[in-house]
Image (cartoon, rainbow, N blue to C red; front, side):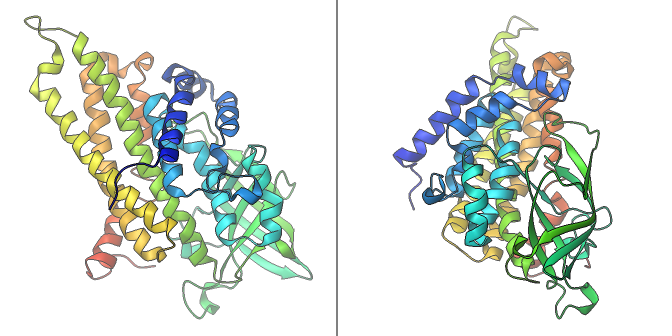
Length: 395
């Protein structure tokens, strides 16, 4: 095992740090309060080639893997950007580029990947539904063949970036669940261009991450050409797992990066703030120990997350990747929530004030308890698929 970054990976980390310096917490505070997309940030990461990290060189990308993408994400987040350092890249590079690289046809790769790599084509994924939630096998959006076209109808919820994306990965049932030979069969993936009058998009007011809209989406007799299908027909479940695992790794990196950022600000403040007997509050073990413990646990989660990325980059079985990714997420989220909680505690009343940014990171990291999979579902996966315990839920 080699835990040392390559020279190329070090360059990615340093480039991400340099970009983050130009997009400080103050920048994201303003974007979050105004509900504005970080256009300048998107241009910066596009110009730096970060949007094309996982795209092969022949399509204009860097030809690297998930490991390098996580390195870029973490340093963007930890050096000032918080969740924003991960969010935009997940929507376009994971949902769009990575899915197409791994499962798209040559025609689809040639159409989408060069434009994604340039930062000219943003993406989103339409997966979650109001009545299905985490149970993707219960989705009701249908795609039916009508001549040489696909006719898609249904509703989706919590679709981030749909308001401005030019491409959408749609997950739909091509065979009703009751007619499928296996419960995991009958699901297919489609690529759609936006905007489209048959796709209605309505933003949902939400608690945080307001520099990106999250939307309700409905398909009303959406017609797509035959070649919009991302093969194989009816077996898209296995392809979508290949996207959900990297999404999980990305959110684990978000927990790590946000926590690093919050801890660094808390430590800086703890050295300056004096209350009793003229001693800096950072010397109080009641504040020092929780941050130290959270940091130690986060570093452990990072190693497990890089193991998941290594497995993914080396084409390991999706279940093996998922097992490691779930473990990393469970550990990172619990430690991350503790880290940001105690960072806020370090600031006292100022931690509740927007101008110190910790309250925003608190709102951001609490999303990671819920998405892309809840802590409870990740634990259920570990219990059943790793420990071999009886299934604790029904699908």
